[in-house]
Amino acid sequence: MTICLFEDATVAHLAPLTLTRAACDLRVGARTLGDGAAALLNADGAHTLALLVRPEIAGVAREEHPGVAVNAAPKGPTLFVNQRWLARPGGLAAALIRVLRGGEPARAFVTPAGALVALWHPDPPAGFSLELPNGTPTEQVAAVMIDRLWDVVADLPERVEHDVLAMARLGTHDGARVADGAHVVAPRDVFLGPGVTVRAGAVIDASDGPVHLAAGVTVESNAVLRGPLFLGEKSTVKALARIDGSAAGEQCRLGGEVHESSLHSFASKGHDGYLGNSALGRWVNLGAATDTSNLKNDYGEVTLFDAAAGGFVASGRQFLGLVMGDHSKCAIHTAFSTGTVVGVFANVFGSGVPPRHVPSFSWGGGEGLVPYRIGKALRVAEAVMARRGTAVSDAERALLAGIAEKGMGNGA
Image 1 (cartoon, rainbow, N blue to C red):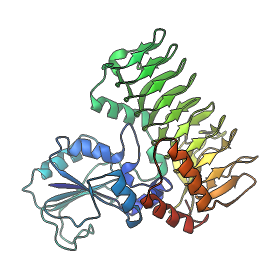
Image 2 (image 1 turned 120 degrees about the vertical axis):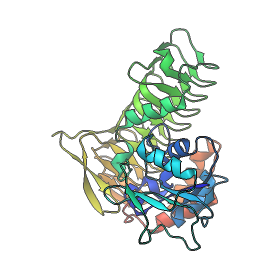
Image 3 (image 1 turned 90 degrees about the vertical axis):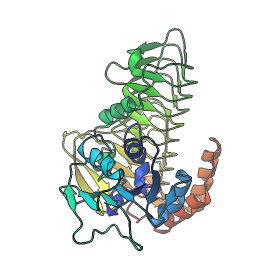
Image 4 (image 1 turned 45 degrees about the horizontal axis):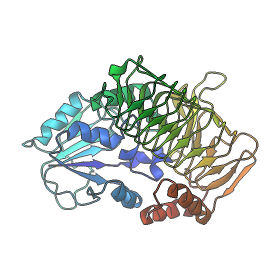
């Protein structure tokens, strides 16, 4: 059996985060969407995983998922699952696990709004399309879908808690080095991976939710970590930092205050300043004393730039901070307004408050924006990535060149 995670047209609303990755690689908790779906539907590893993604993303998807077939024609019994589904145990998951056992005819699972969540086909024909043919049995299901940017950070503490509990290693501290004078509160709800270092004066408090620190994480002196919380491998929490209700991928750097925010791998927020209800892409760097507003002065609904809609749209949320795409950076003392969207490879600096939408490959801030030349942008990326022992791949170069060609008006 094959489980094929597919993208649909709605991923356009998730730019800039989906400009450089498949939707399944969005970090929406301790896990990405794809990891969550695989853990639930393929827990025993008995099924083959495959991906259907936008053509421009295929190269980087293959690098992100070595050994996984990307955009190959489906063969044999296949369960197609929407990458935007936030996988959770329950009725839909049970139904999908049941069809994976085989013996059932083709059927589709859709939300009340008509979005295709999953499609089971025992024998996809040549030229198969996810467009449902007339007569396909359809079942309406309840499913949480990541439809818009604000959905990436919605209910983040609850999602982190769900994922950390599912990892089922709480209470394990083997191989961790916890200094005298450090405090681990509610240790049975804390996982400390091998090589974790917790220095004197640091506090890890799981009273309000579990904490998972993956292998090689360093927590410097007098930092305070409150669950629910997940930190990926080799991430560093700087001295005096305050982190809660958040999730970060591998090799992130966190300082100052981070509240209910999602950081993709290699993101750096290593200095004082506030980051709240925000999502950062890979290789983002926030300058010292950068602050994000996550609440309007009138306590009203936050609007957010939607690239597919071509303008600002109502989020339905009261708390919403910054969304910043991969490789974007800002100068020291940058102050972002509530509900700001920054594209990929933007360099934000200068006096004044930056606009609430900073397009990809732009340079400047409140005093105006000019194009950020791709050659210069890639030279910076090469220097940054070399410090972590990585490099810009040919597939990434091709993808970024396509984004840059669209210019500052690309809506992302």
